[in-house]
Length: 274
Image (cartoon, rainbow, N blue to C red; front, side, top):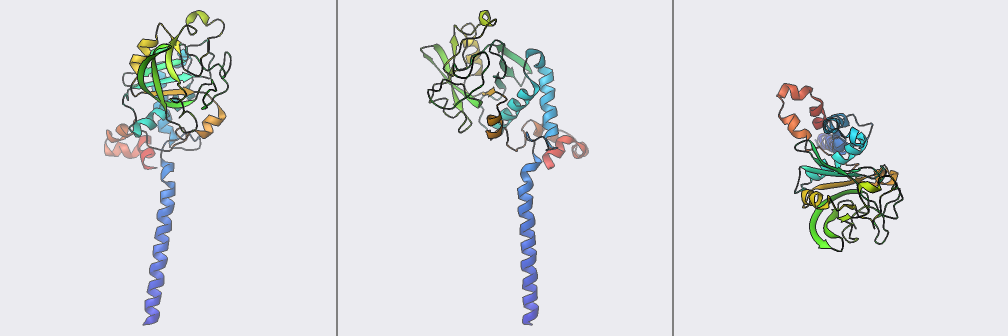
């Protein structure tokens, strides 16, 4: 009798161990089902298609913004939406620091209505580079621009006039922007008349022309996504937002609104199920 009880106990323990191991492995793989930036992740395809369709609809290619820059900006925007951190969820602003400062490299986009509200000049930090920004920092007094995702905050009137603060969302990358007084403000050294040479540079602030700064600030202030992009290798590797695995909020309605049979065959459903 004791042998039978012992044998049953061994079987139960073995079954429990196998079940726990299988569940643990399943949990380890959960993150792989969501769209990410990883090129070998097949489930990134629906996210890429969605981003590309918006990019094409907005005509961003003709305005100088690369498809890759928009994809990364849109992914981070989706991440902040998922986290419930955007009080103004319809807006996405992108500064493409990989472009020359003589180009209109600030894009303020109304995602909800598929419109580019502003496409204009913007400065980078004086120690980030000359015509092109090539070096970035999160350190105080570096006089360099910070990369990454920020959220627009409150406005105030200071030495540069009407200005807007930011809150950096990426630790170690731009979380010091408020302490550094990195703000959006108007400037005399950023305007169309300087596009034949090089724009003036700031102490790290994304400054815009005085002729537009109030309109831009009043549009994006108070909780919208603001992304400063560059194809900087360190940033691409270090950004937890760019490399996060999560279900994009924009993909969820597309799946939910389809009939069940269509959902099962849909690439969007594949992204949701893994």
